[in-house]
Length: 444
Image (cartoon, rainbow, N blue to C red; front, side, top):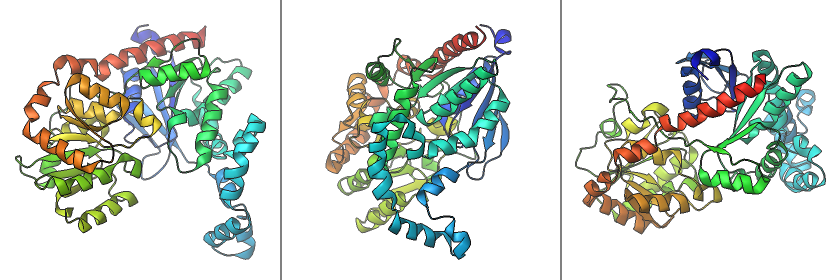
């Protein structure tokens, strides 16, 4: 299809976050719009963000989250607060004494889902909230294709497809699995059970499956006996990175660290399974080295690690900086000594090259990665970094020193061909081909 032909098709990209900083979702929408499709990114109005905005050549529409179903589950005695005129926190506490979430939903939920998939929405009310949040707006947008990002949008997209079919309109649905659901770690045990059930009962109803790695594609095909292997679109950065912005600058300039001081950077979410504590501990064994964490500074885990750094007497070498725009990450960290991926052993961490791997690569940083199967194998194959045992701070300290001492050797392994291979432009071609197929299917 050419741009003129694509202009007659409307793609709605659906995601349950607010889309801020979601690099894959934003790059996908921009690529599709730049090549002629009319694209609307539909997400939630969370935080201080505009309700509607134009981003490049596509539109972002945000809707107010509906949380009635999940609130009723978490506070089953909620209505009493209006009669008793007491704070909701009191009712929430009382509700947990009488009908605690742990006793009912964490024990009974899995049993109910084994009895029948009809219990899926009652057992995980966030799905009902998602449906109530997006359904009306989704119908109003009247898409030809719905790009369902992550498993929690599957039910919303397929129900919209069914409603449209009753009205005589065909909608094609693409399921973009950003992670392997059965390998994701979440605090609430019902999340994995509910999402796995939703994926299992929905994946054969979509028109195309897409994911972020070859391994996940093979696992999905094996798990669900898919007729076709899912299309793989890596979440890689753009090949040409922006120049240093005078306001955003670079991490080393922002924290005021001299160029000859070793600086090891981490970019991404902050949680115990991300292994940031190993980076802090490694500073004890690497006295002249500093680390920079580009994370949410208000995160409780980050605050805990900063307090621990004080105890270890390394706090002066731990620097925290808030997130920067997704399109600027590689430029921002480009003057660090290395990029670190210290994640712990969870199933989903083992099976793909994470976004920060590509971001460090395009920043031309040597990569220090814990011994996750896929990433460790890639680093050993390419020679662009060092692998250490997850949670082993002394090994990480040794890796810090090795990179600082022989950095030029690892940088030399980051060749133009490697950057071309892992560039968004190459991935965007596969995304575009998939949507061309779906657009034609929606009118077929």
